[in-house]
Image 1: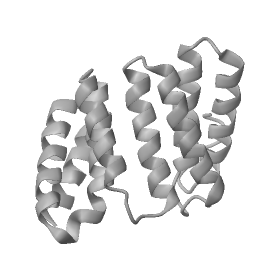
Image 2 (image 1 turned 60 degrees about the vertical axis):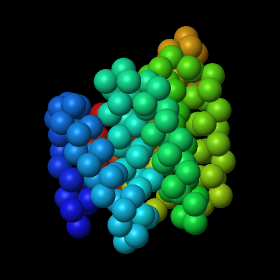
Image 3 (image 1 turned 90 degrees about the vertical axis):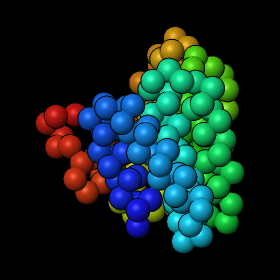
Length: 168
């Protein structure tokens, strides 16, 4: 429970852009989860979030290391979980300016998501498409970026709590 509480606090700080505090709490959550057999299943998501925060703080070597740990902790989980970890790796690589590598991880995640439907109430595919679109934009591949963004918005609108049509 302590790991989940710290992870939740880190998530809130992450959303508020308080990355150093989010990183601190995500790191504590990971430390606890690694020692608690009951928290092992949550490690992939915790490492993914830590990776994302480090990428936002331009700590690219740490972000890549944590994304790799996220991928390594997905063992035994479903394709949607692995696709999510692949997408976080793509995001970290994109933010580090390693666009071609990021696209390879996007492709891996797409193949996994094509084999399994998204879990209800999640947005793995729209998150993947957003990251791919941002990567395409960085490469100057604007038509592909627009296509991905349009599809990501379409998928996102279908989720509970999505933004109203008049906003997006």
